[in-house]
Amino acid sequence: MNTKLCATALLVVGVGLAACDTPPQNDGLNGTLWLQSSVENKANALATYRLGTMMLDAALADKSWTAAPNEQKGDFSGKPPAIILDVDETVLDNSVYQSWVVTKNTHYSSKTWGPFVNDIRSRPIPGSLDFIKTAVAKGIKIFYVTNRKAPLEAATRKNLAVFGYPIDTSEDTVLTKGEKKAWKSSKKSPRRAHVAKNYRVLMVFGDNFGDFVDGYKGSLAERHALYQKHDAMWGTKWFMLANPSYGSWESSAFGNAWGKPLAVRRQMKLDALDAWKPK
Ligand SMILES: [Mg+2]
Image 1 (cartoon, rainbow, N blue to C red):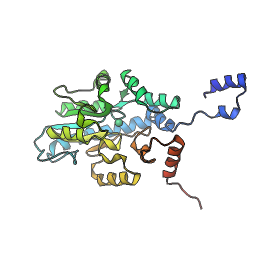
Image 2 (image 1 turned 90 degrees about the horizontal axis):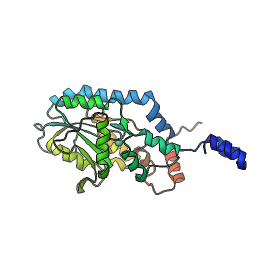
Image 3 (image 1 turned 90 degrees about the vertical axis):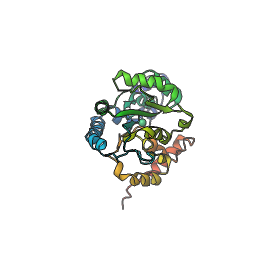
Image 4 (image 1 turned 120 degrees about the vertical axis):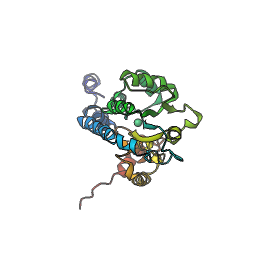
């Protein structure tokens, strides 16, 4: 209940003060506030893309360089270069949708996500447009690999075009979930493999572990092990944008058990914290 409603309710039916003093508790508040309004986020995203820009020439020059170690097969040294980017919270900022979720104290749903995407309200992530334009100017093909579903591809292309994001039209370079039979899964390795078949993948950009590896739904310990296994990739070939608003990092804490009641999932997240125990 917001303050205005509380004041009205107090006057009309004498609702208890305690209920009105506390705004709705939504776990997305701080993360979304940070994502949408903080210069800390902007500076972090900008720095990530600038680091990517700095690595471009080395990636182009080293023909043994690949950012798809699990998908790039055979001799790829002579293949033309490509870069794979996720879309949501990597290239496009959907924080107005997340803010709607938080202020309505609701949750993500495909029923509201579709209309949001079709409203073309997503904004550029700082640094992403300059980076992509620089890469294209160096002859690198850009692939957008997104878990937006196939029916949302047209709106996604439209939103990217609004801000002038280059979209190569010599082939499909916006690879959505379910667009092909083999791409039904949220796991992106079949789409990375599709790109790696004809291109040398120089870099991957994402905001979710799943943008890089398929094991993102593992336990927190399994994710950590997989992260460490790919230690050499981060900041050279793999670039992670921060997303404290949503992601597999959250659901892993409650075993991806979205069917459990909210209170149970929240308790599991609390239990996942490594908290100081004062003596
Ligand atoms: Mg994303």
